[in-house]
Amino acid sequence: MKNPFLLAIFLVGALALQDTRSREEERLTFIDKRLEVVYPVIQGFKSLITLDPFKVTQTWIGSEICSYRGFHCDNPPDNKTAVTVASIDFNGFQLFAPSIEGFIDQLPDLALFHANSNNFGGTVPSKIVNLKYLYELDISNNKFTGQFPTAVVGMPGLSFLDIRFNSFSGSIPPQIFGQNLDVLFINDNTFTASLPEIPGDSHILFLTLADNKFNGPLPRSILRSMTTLTEKVEQLNFAGNLLFGAIPDAVCMFLRENLVNFSLSDNYFTHVGPWCKILVERGVLDVRNNCIPFFPGQRSIEECAEFFVKPNYYCPHAWFHSFLPCRYSHISSSSASDFMPMVAPSP
Image (cartoon, rainbow, N blue to C red):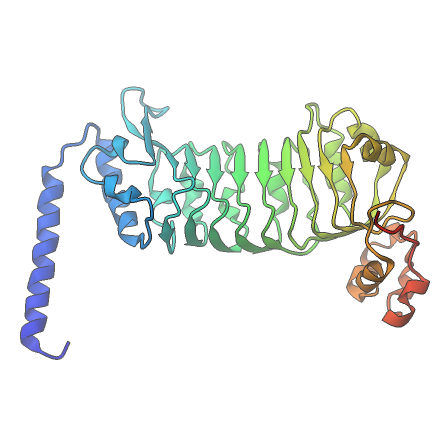
């Protein structure tokens, strides 16, 4: 703005608007100091929202924060007479904001944050680790990017973590499997590398790792941890990755009485034992679209050959190469089918 006069008018107007807002906030009366503290946090986040198709933020006005759409108040555990923002439910609001940093991490008494099906981006703020009451975090079906949100690792109260349908990438910290989580949904991202080893026992009852780019065999520590479970596993879903090798029969033998649904479909496994076959027959274990010889509904020989001739998928775990020895890791694609196990055609 080159005109000094217009610049002066702009600055005076901006200062006047800021002063008006300050005086308006001074006139607001809150039922609890904790609500007064988070009021500017909410208003700051509101200013970042550029798309609000359901006009949700039009209700975020005044001191009645507990009446704001999507906000829910309760008494915090440390003071049963206080009133604070305890949970947020933005599911399906389709709000668009470039980041949630400076918002969720600045609500100290937050216990639940559900924001499924919005357009929130950026990374998960590291300061959420300070939310001592947070036990449910659902940011699925958004536009988050970056590495796995490591801030959630070590949050002892967290029991539900859902980060499905985003664009997270990289590897998964093994410690997350050892936390006291009941639900862990990380499917439909772009996580890569091998599945991590699990340090200790797992308490997870619903585990979905499907539709990423994990590769390699199933880690033996994951399978060992399953055999220590004392409760019924409701769901294990590893479908749609790049996993391969044998499906350990010892795990299927244990899980035959402790499993509701186990999906390993759309991978590149090459062998199942007798106990796993029983689970397949029961409809509990799904191994469709793999590379298992003489099983119906498997990939074509050509598709399996194309996968297994890639050197990256051979020698790191030689113990499971029942059908595809490491010495064939550099065979040409034209001769690949000579070394491939027979695969039954899809029905």
